[in-house]
Image (tube, rainbow, N blue to C red; front, side):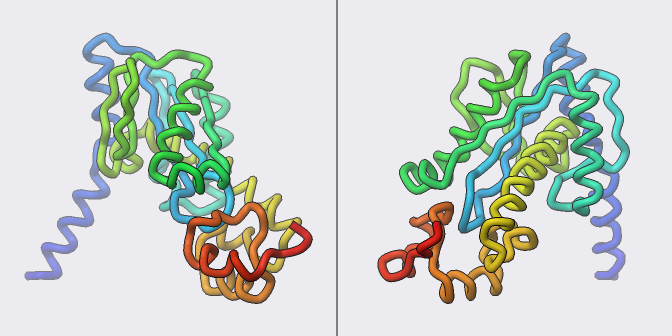
Length: 222
């Protein structure tokens, strides 16, 4: 009996209508609907990145969902498809220095605001993954929005691929931290490398264990 309940729950998740919010807004005559999402709240290194994406009414991309649930190959493919089909894309990048100054929650809001500001088309309504923003444009905050809204899913992919590519470049400079695989998250190998080599300037100085190592060890080549 318990097994049957679990299976039913999984089927319901697979049947999510991720066009529901967009369709409801278009039924009200709203055309320029933006999805906004961020990537990079948890890593120890690098910026937090947000994307604002406006899709055409007839947009279809089978399999598009939360970027974290996609393989890297799928994300790259979807990223190119979104770039070629989207009406507008804006990206916001907030550096590790600002994150340390204002905290990651506030930095995430700043990244989202920059993404909206950098979008070539001003949205009529914005769908946001969980976060609430105080802006003059009407917004809807959706918990697990990257699963429930196709537009937020698109923003999630754009933000994820944008940030990952930044970490690949950082990995070329500092291969000992394994950024190409951990994307800056506190994996065992990353933490061990911090303890062995110290921190680089791109590390977030207010995040543990970086903050615990900072007073005594800074990588000289950074």
